[in-house]
Image 1 (cartoon, helix red, strand yellow):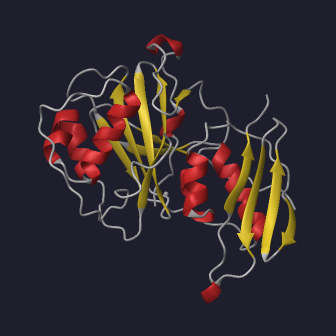
Image 2 (cartoon, one colour; image 1 turned 180 degrees about the vertical axis):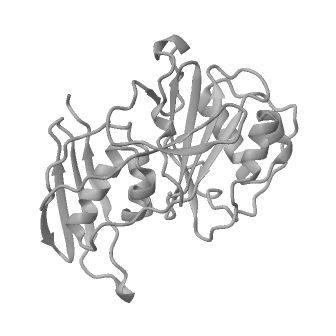
Length: 284
């Protein structure tokens, strides 16, 4: 089966202004550095000025690395705990972005005001809240030219929110921009090999919109928990059936390997999304 190519897209965030979406073709990540699992970013000088971080790669117009918590991810969570402005300020970009996003999600307005400037707060509040069944996950933080961009992605809608702040947040009101994109990815042909191919490509391209549309919630969560592997040259999927399931294996020229599993039959006629069976990081 031939390999499907999927397009990566970019949201360009203007500091302290209205954010606009722009298209980005699949290719190099503009030298961006990815910070995962709460790690500290490198000094601002590590990325050449003018380079755009990969976290800005979001869908065009209309979809750590672990969810905030298993009990409060959903938009309609009743657990809203007001936080006083005296609460300590997060000292890493990842922690700062997560704290602000959770304050928005649970409508902790005092805390959100504390962590955003006027523009950041206004843009956070403009993100639509209604979407039954939507669950948000932290995806990644990327940096470049003294700036940090942290991405949150929702399953199964593919919506994304990108939070923008200067490098090294150590004070209040550091979030100066927020960009929201509604998921709109079109799924490939309705067959398991095509969905497996799309999942592998979307994962390596950080196309969270498409990834959310072809994977189960558990696969989406698991793949976001993996360090971004960068663009991979994936083989066509090799699929075989066993005990009511189909397993598709894809390997890349860079040494990565991913195995997806899908049910052969789903009650109600729903086409089965692919689940993650295993993933091996690229070797080079």
